[in-house]
Amino acid sequence: MLDPLYRQIAEDLRGKIESGELGQGTQLPTEIELREHYGASRNTVRDALRWLVTRGLVNTLPGQGTFVLGKVEPFLTSLLTAPNALPARQEIGLGGETTAYAAEVQAHGRKPEYSVPRVEIQQADAIVQTELQVSEAASVVSRHQQRRIDGTPYSLQTTFYPMEYVERGAVKLIRSEDIRPVMAYLEEVLGIRQVGWRDKITVRAAGASETAFFRLPDDGRIGVFETLRTGYDESGRPLRLTVSSYPTDRNQFVMDIGSVPPQIFPSREKPGRSPTFGSVGASGIAGRSHA
Amino acid sequence: MLDPLYRQIAEDLRGKIESGELGQGTQLPTEIELREHYGASRNTVRDALRWLVTRGLVNTLPGQGTFVLGKVEPFLTSLLTAPNALPARQEIGLGGETTAYAAEVQAHGRKPEYSVPRVEIQQADAIVQTELQVSEAASVVSRHQQRRIDGTPYSLQTTFYPMEYVERGAVKLIRSEDIRPVMAYLEEVLGIRQVGWRDKITVRAAGASETAFFRLPDDGRIGVFETLRTGYDESGRPLRLTVSSYPTDRNQFVMDIGSVPPQIFPSREKPGRSPTFGSVGASGIAGRSHA
DNA sequence: AACGATTTGTTCGTATGTATC
DNA sequence: TGATACATACGAACAAATCGT
Image 1 (cartoon, rainbow over the protein chains, first blue to last red):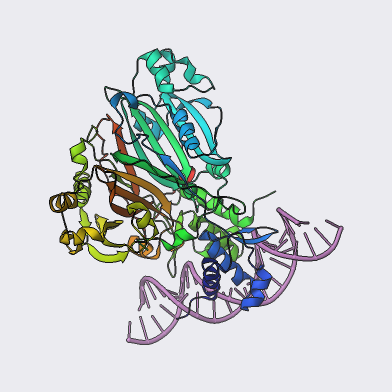
Image 2 (cartoon, rainbow over the protein chains, first blue to last red):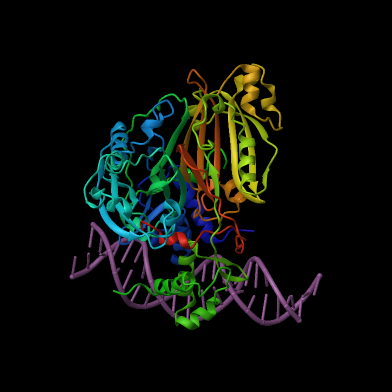
């Protein structure tokens, strides 16, 4: 009833990692050394290492070695920016999303960066059709932005507006420059007011461009949060759709409902960067209250 | 500058899967057949298959074969159950969580099931200490529940209350039976009212018991949403903490802010079950708007 | 219940390629 | 450039799980 050899080796190494004997960032013995140590073939040792890799405990770098990964400190994003109280009806409409993002990041003492929006005119795809309730042939304006915090890639965001808005005079929508806040502009030009929105949050595997931008490992190990935020006007018609994705390994969402005391921000020490990409926490494996 | 052979094979198979040539549930050719077809060694074919497995496109079963996985239909959970309007202050306090869960699931025409709560008295761990603002030595009552929808495991939930509540007379908390709604009971007995809560949502790797209960693949491929819901009373003191976990492959969260039209529930056809565990969507790989 | 055929899982050996220092 | 370390690839053998006879 013995576990296969590669599992035994993997579990042994795992123990050394979780006990701290092999600390974060440490280089593991080379495959040859492990081969001698455990008396297994190099292929078996590699199977053990692969097992650790898929679980996010270590990372292998060609020509360099295998390294113990560490935990990254997640960034907290508020989905409701309602300081201690439910937002008043009027405040909801403003929707200065870039502004809100920048303000929140700075409130945590970190530096927000965002790219100039990349504007495209596209056919509405399935999700956009559903959320914006437009027909298959409909054109939409898409405004895409990359966001970073302290230099590390944080989110990709695309907002879709019906092309009709541009035709009715909101021409700034197709300019590749910041509109802050967008909703104020739309209200001014078109008389459109956003009175609420619906968020849908899922997790899915990262796409190719996300893997590249977020510098995620190229197996599907780390997914991305995908939030769909659909804004509505007084008559209940969808106004715009914002699709954002955030890597799950470095993000956390918060929202306050009702009356809640202000958030405590623990003082951040140096995050203790680990080699290459962000990495996922060994601690997560344990699973706390439920594991 | 060619891709490695195993990647070429994997991409070829992936194409056949995504084009539908190899439909959901189909058995792939055996490793021997693939070996002959591609003129590669069996180990190389196996590398290709592993690449597909890691990405959740196929599943291998010892002694049987390799099968194409399909997409599962995610269940939508509302984090704010506020039909069309912001909840009035008074309504927030009720917090009939089991009730809310059962009602929502039934509204989707599905069958909710939940286990009898398992009650334990524990030392507060790090998260409970932080969220409940209790000391290290403090005891807490933990009430744990398993939830299913239409028979499939949906979430694990544990709610922590300060032990002090029991000492002050809320003895039902340590009985292993449903208290519906809990907050009404606490208000009645202790005069404690919940006026708001804070949700924190993260994704982490599944723990051992979660992997078992949710029947997840045993590599860390599919993680779980972990939501921390901390309820507060009028004076801003934390009352209770609910830790829930939901597998990311079959769940989606929704929340409405401000005035939003009612949700449309698309009529559900047969989900098209795939072999073994729930499986993850091939479609997710593409990454829609951002990929 | 037993057995054989099929299919994936594990392990070894070996050789060569590629990335990094 | 050479040495080191991981990556890819092939071949081979046996183990373990599954299924039908």
